[in-house]
Length: 49
Image 1 (cartoon, helix red, strand yellow):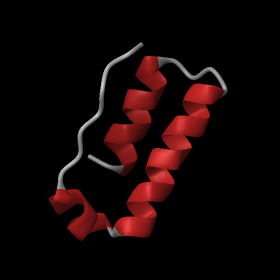
Image 2 (cartoon, rainbow, N blue to C red; image 1 turned 60 degrees about the horizontal axis):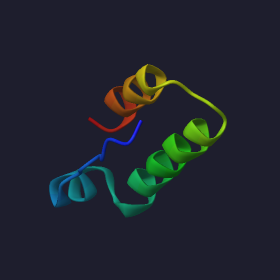
Image 3 (cartoon, rainbow, N blue to C red; image 1 turned 45 degrees about the vertical axis):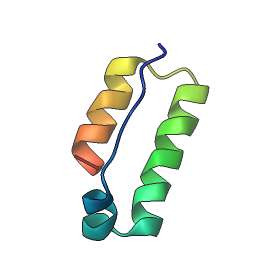
Image 4 (spheres, rainbow, N blue to C red; image 1 turned 90 degrees about the vertical axis):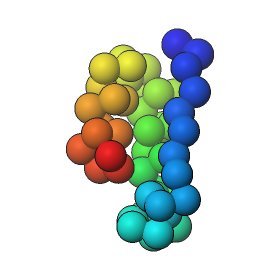
């Protein structure tokens, strides 16, 4: 799974730098522990999108 994820500056304005970076870090850790792309997508949609 080598797809890239893009986010906009608007997301940083809406969610704040620390909260958004926390969620991106959580996605990275979940991937490292073997989460499926579907799980990562669901997390992203729930917490970021």
